[in-house]
Amino acid sequence: DTEVTQTPKHLVMGMTNKKSLKCEQHMGHRAMYWYKQKAKKPPELMFVYSYEKLSINESVPSRFSPECPNSSLLNLHLHALQPEDSALYLCASSREGRDQYFGAGTRLSVL
Amino acid sequence: AQSVTQPDIHITVSEGASLELRCNYSYGATPYLFWYVQSPGQGLQLLLKYFSGDTLVQGIKGFEAEFKRSQSSFNLRKPSVHWSDAAEYFCAASGYSTLTFGKGTMLLVSP
Image 1 (cartoon, chains in turn brown, green):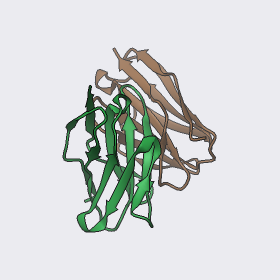
Image 2: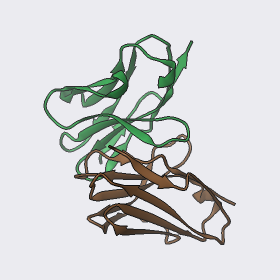
Image 3: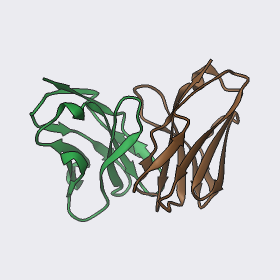
Image 4: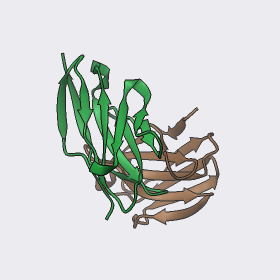
């Protein structure tokens, strides 16, 4: 089983809203990732959690706040987003930081 | 700097014809290499990976890739393309924990 589950699939929010994206995996992977992907572009790494600790933050604005409550769950809290933050947000996980398995993504629209 | 190059932005192949997607990498040492496929609005699916050993790697959906150290290449091949193969294909490389993606190649399949 190589499944990474992301919810919700679609999200529309205003610039003053607070929302959260969720990601779950039950493969025993100890590294989890958040990516942002704009249309016709490759994914851009945002955050990496290794053994539930934030190990990489790619200079992401503070309106994006990651959280790893346990080894199976990864959240991305969103607050005061801008229209340019509209994108596909992808979660991934890996066992030893090599091959990453991706979820189907959350399509986010900021109005 | 580490980089992955996919020289073809778009490729059109007739259904039933063979396919080769090109990928070149620039890394300090031989990285781990991957091919992912992404259908519109979906997440990335891992097609195959190369870590070491046999330079011809078999993947899912009838895809294979060949690692050539002398050419710093990891080209993806399929002997007979199906209409359902139309998608975006990303080559990626990893030193250990993070992926460097190429810009992607969009595969179009003509009847």
